[in-house]
Length: 377
Image (tube, rainbow, N blue to C red):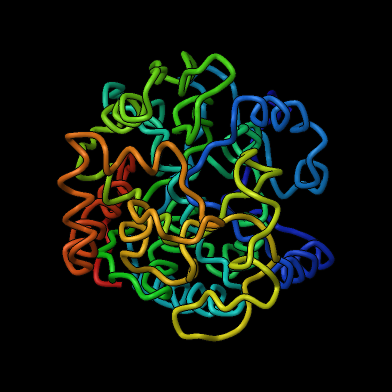
């Protein structure tokens, strides 16, 4: 419920049966699309179903406080002790093993992006500004339409969070994302840790749409600022400029769609299944079998490998018709401001990796409140 108080302890304790269920969920993990919001109709459906969500019933997701800001309690983690640094390093290893076993790379990237992507550079008060503050773990934010399917990632991460109580949720989400990129063959990202967790949810409406709604427009008037626009490029700029990011970051971050799939039952986009997402498909960079749950539509053929294939596939008219090409994808090669970056990344994977790593780092730190920063993990 929206008026429930968050847990009074920084580490949520779960019964053995719940933890076993969370571990079992890894075997059937539904790997989600990265940073694609559902169509407006799907979003409304997801909001209506929030109250009956399985996680709400099990207690894995807790309602964030809606009390006045002055009385809200913020979880503050202590200084970066040796134990804290040791936990961060061990946590990173466990996350690597987790994504290697479950192929959960895309959903972990999406979880972190949807946490940090709520940031509004024009709001100076923390945590009202949103961003990488760990608030996506709470109801109602986890049940926002754009976050459909992300409760699966939370469930998978809960045993790791319990194992490493000194690692904040905000750090855990961002670390899981960076590890997932590197594990899939992408660049190692120069991450910084020490984020403080917030218990205040960000408002709905700050994340981008991939396609227009029934009114022919992208975005809407919700969130902290209107993102409504009649063009995909205009909409993307309203979303990312609000975060303090620019055209280079928009295009570089779009390239992360080399990972993952769109699910029709979540975003309303794509097909139920394609030859690239069937149970026998090989999608990993290392050629190993396994994709998690079969189905959905991918942007690239090897959608568990991080490379520049998004930029070589989108403008290619001869690419397989089963690959996903949304309006928000095609615009990066049509818009005058986006096109130079898209063409640069199409020609050079190393240039893409360099700009992507810088953009990912920026995104991961938006709105974050750091206490005794930790680097070099």
